[in-house]
Image (tube, rainbow, N blue to C red):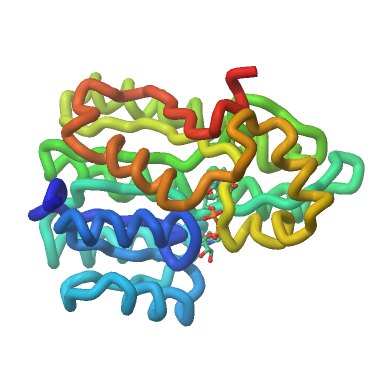
Length: 250
Ligand SMILES: NC(=O)c1ccc[n+]([C@@H]2O[C@H](COP(=O)([O-])OP(=O)(O)OC[C@H]3O[C@@H](n4cnc5c(N)ncnc54)[C@H](O)[C@@H]3O)[C@@H](O)[C@H]2O)c1
């Protein structure tokens, strides 16, 4: 308990699934949580589940650069620093390459990748001001192993993996105390994936390559995110943490 008291934590995609589970775990551990999402209605509901009147909900599309700049100004005047940035907002869709329009490609890449870049760039001075800043970037097993029909998603998540390593090296070189790591969940049961698990045939196919025989739960990814954000992982930077029930071990 209270591993994150006195720490300010920003999570994107915090209104649902893994982002929401992480926000709840950080709040339980004493953090002040800034929940960022593009869905204002779901954000307000999410905020209510955290308790305490010091957490904040911020409506922002992570691809909106001016929005990130004004959020950085707001955090600077309110807190003067940011301790943890969890860039989690993202989505994917089944899209064979031949059926992917340039517009669909850009929409998936921009949320999953541009959002990570913009958050990193504009929050970096505040993370450096923390003296022990930690960035956790949401990739996927699809940032490591491919699957047909996931072209834009795989491309973006693979890029998030490498971008996190570059971030780690630039921070180490700058000596600003900021660490950056990527996290790679396997099949997790969240609102994003729930429709697939509702169909027994699709669920069977999805779980066929999961050695432990079940999807992961958002809490199980939240625990790994808290580890990467905490001092317990203080010698980890530029690393990739796979949380996939053994899927990529095969
Ligand atoms: N569910 C899985 O099996 C799984 C596996 C590996 C990685 N991931 C990754 O984990 C992250 C969270 O996924 P989830 O399953 O919790 O999904 P989810 O749909 O439950 O939650 C994603 C949240 O991101 C928000 N969001 C989407 N686009 C946004 C934007 N442009 N700006 C701000 N907010 C935006 C949505 O409104 C939503 O609240 C994603 O990056 C996803 O790719 C999920």
